[in-house]
Length: 145
Picture 1 (cartoon, rainbow, N blue to C red):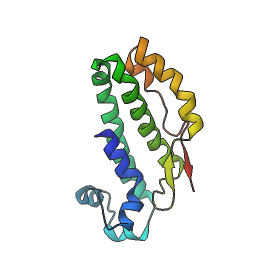
Picture 2 (picture 1 turned 135 degrees about the vertical axis):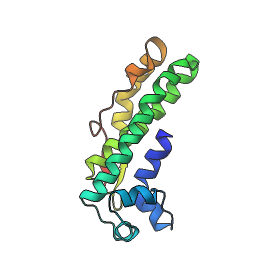
Picture 3 (picture 1 turned 90 degrees about the vertical axis):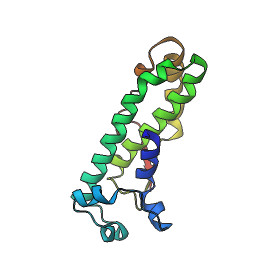
Picture 4 (picture 1 turned 60 degrees about the vertical axis):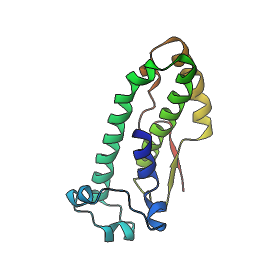
């Protein structure tokens, strides 16, 4: 759920260009953000509040997944931890981009990926998986303009 929601949030603009809207309409309405606003690419306090709400939900999913990762066979933990960390980092990149998911693509740069691998490998082999999940929102993630 966490990674799928992260994909949805990262790809709002791309999906919209392909005629798809995955943001729940009832939650858009809760923040007084309309489909017309979405089509206009409006990034304002309403959209930011909607995105923060969705991002908080995704963060909660990542947090709730940690104990399950620890239950996996050690041989599988590195791949799952890496995927979770990379996708979690995308949430930070969205924020670094000023929540502009219409014209900017959020991603975690290769340099950050390389730097995080030893920590993730160590956590997957010798310590709790929850120790590994420490990329802060916006900390290492950057965006592409």
